[in-house]
Length: 228
Image 1: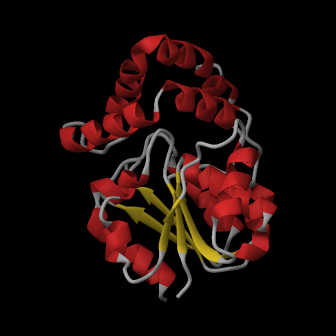
Image 2: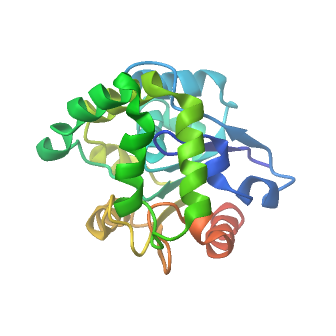
């Protein structure tokens, strides 16, 4: 059975995937965090160095960006690919310009404030889902401000990976929450067009974190992708 490598989003750890990994048993699941290195290529190389020889690969948001870089570096190792609520394009200038103030605020001791300001309006379809918001804050606090700095700068300097996706011919899934305000629909339509063999799934009732917001539909889609 092909092992699955899961890469969570920015300032998230394995808890971001909720019950999905256990529900996929007995498939081996490897949790990989993009925390080693200062650039997306360095983070991808670090994960590849510890990954199985060949694997299914899934990443959400920043995890998807790192997954695309892994595909660029060692495409022969990726059997199938799932990209969730992510973006294959380089960072827009207006987003990049917001990074420095956020980093300064986080390093000054207000990481919680930065994450809370970003989480409340953008992450979830249901802003009243305090349990999920609290989990996101707990994951961010566990990783700390220096990881926030390095991940922010890595995202700021990332490359466009549309050509990488266009070369991939394996089974692919492109999934997003219907109410995702961070990675909009057009990015997912683009990834689906670049990989015409992919399945595009828009999950109702979810924002940026479908594994936590709508675990049932997300798990069912993952099972179809892994065992068609």
